[in-house]
Amino acid sequence: MNETVEKKSLGQIFMNGILDENPTFRLVLGTCPTLAVTTSVENGIGMGLAATFVLVGSNYVVSLLKNFIPDEVRIPGYVVIIATFVTVAQLLMQAYLPDLNASLGLFVPLIVVNCIILARAEAFANKNSALHSVMDGLGMGLGFTLAITLISAIREILGGGTFLGHSLFGEGFEPMTFFALAPGGFIIFGLMIAIVNWLSTKFKRSVN
Image (cartoon, rainbow, N blue to C red; front, side, top):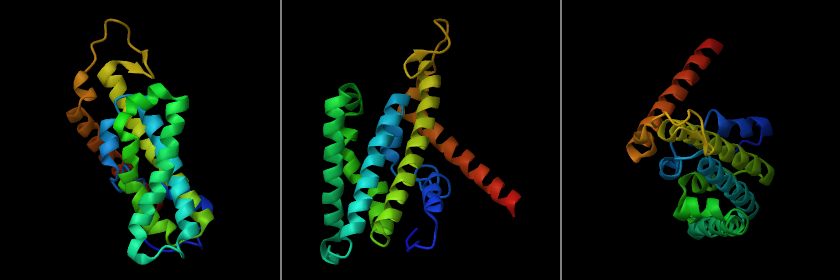
């Protein structure tokens, strides 16, 4: 979405990030955290909500300042804004969710260079109102959260036999640890992209 969308409803903008332009399954952005932190549902939810906080905050500020940031320093300006919100998110996690912060490790500060966030600042917030930009950030963030939480759930169940740390199948279950490793993550990610695109195509054909 690389244009103004003032005529679209807030609901349409919000749902766009969850369905039509889901950053994980449709745009295939932010694949590094998608593969790295999705070994448990707790990690997936934590990373998704942290990214959502940064998306909403940075979209809002970029939209407010879009007429004051010179084109020559536009991208560096976005990075400074994004880094500010990432710092706030990391400090809050360190204070209130230290175990989750330790589990996510380096991937929290790396939100600064997450292409989803920079892409929305450039393609959307830089061209639209603050309210529309907030809804875009919220939709994209929750779409990202839902996607990586789904991948996390599949990997945690198959790779560890647990869900949110609780055993599902008892002591006799032998987890398929392959799915907890990077190759297993790639396979699950690829299959989910294929399934989501197939369902989307099928739905559009049925509507037409």
